[in-house]
Image 1 (cartoon, chains in turn yellow, orange):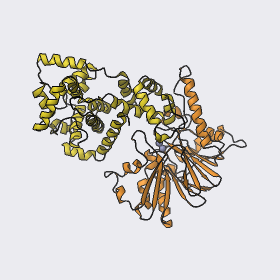
Image 2 (cartoon, chains in turn brown, purple):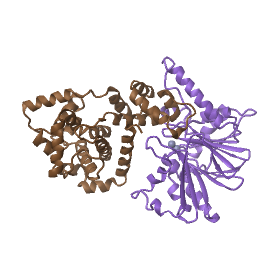
Image 3 (cartoon, rainbow over the protein chains, first blue to last red):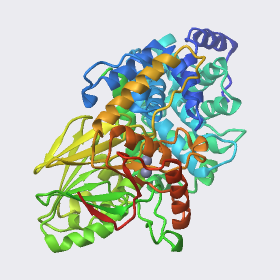
Length: 290
Length: 295
Ligand SMILES: [Zn+2]
Ligand SMILES: [Zn+2]
């Protein structure tokens, strides 16, 4: 992990404290939807408490595709109309997108960031589920992938000038963004991202994944390898963009977990990759209110 | 109108000595209208044997209606032989999927990916058309009208009613009758019950008075509690639905892959004993691969 000065640490801590709490309803939905036998009643109650998610679900139901004679106005009715499982998956996709930032700061292209995060999440989950490591839930990999670059959002919001300079430096010199961040800010987005994950009280494995998605880990597990590789694959396939022009080589430990280098992994995923990309752009659109 | 069953098995093809009589292929039903239009309900593995019989009546113009996109209802589509022969037409109908945001065209796109099937869609010689339907939106096939109704399954599932010259068939695809997710003590219980009752009325109206009802009867009532929420009906729920809809004949289908011919008949016998047939009741039957009826 990077060594940072006490002064910088204070600054970053302040920034992290300025970030909103991780939405309870989203956390609950992510939690409930990973259980195959979710109690429908419980999920409906969680969704109903979140007006934004509720509205988005109702919008899908009342879209032209179902040509309803009368508008559907409740989640209960949505469940009866489309079936519980469909509503469950709709809620999951809406919740995933909902936690990502919406407005631009420091010329940070949020739509491209969203795509990068969603594809990294999807690929990480896929890689992890192929590894079938007992005790590691592919859904945790999804969340880790979704949030791995969240530190950049903190930078964009609280250190916009420095972050913008780091992005320009990375682009002009063709170096990795996290290296440019270290040079200009003194710490990279993995540091502040993992601090935020700590504040949100995520599991240690998840925090570690975010902290070490550009570096070796003391605990090199399947989740870490999946997220590490997924991030690079998403960049190599040019799915979205989170300000980092470089595709870095995968550490040997990551290749060992996943049975090959980045090209071999991409080949092994085949058509599943484009499916993930397609789904991600759909999720991203869903959030833009389309 | 003629109806022929080419696949009656649920979930996964189940060939072998224990399923010789009722058959091991997954869902596929052929319908020949009075003006000899070809309508195919679902593209489970049964569609392969059906497609071979079509080679003698080319050019083939097939109207396929997909109830939903679970494998057992689409698995045979890439093996529908007429699609490899120029001059034939395949028109695929089905629902919009709100999760993927795609229409019925995804059914082929997903199956014909390079790693999973040797022929790409662009290489298929027949003309393939797609029509994504809205619930309640009827489609005309010659003299025949096909109308989809939204039923209850883990993915969007259409039941189809086929009306031709005063005769009618309704096929549910996979369907679990709605149940209340709340307990009687919950505040939302009554509201939810009203929504379900309303929905049931719509479903019964869609199949009202059909000559033949073909319905998902995967489980026995004893098996059901462990499978609640999986999206399938029981023999008993099918019988109740057939009675309420005033169907003349009811076929139980989507047989469990592990159920042998003997077990199937044993369970069905028990159910029939529970519902001794009274005047006006439907005629109850087990769907059997290869069986053909004319109405
Ligand atoms: Zn099925
Ligand atoms: Zn199904």
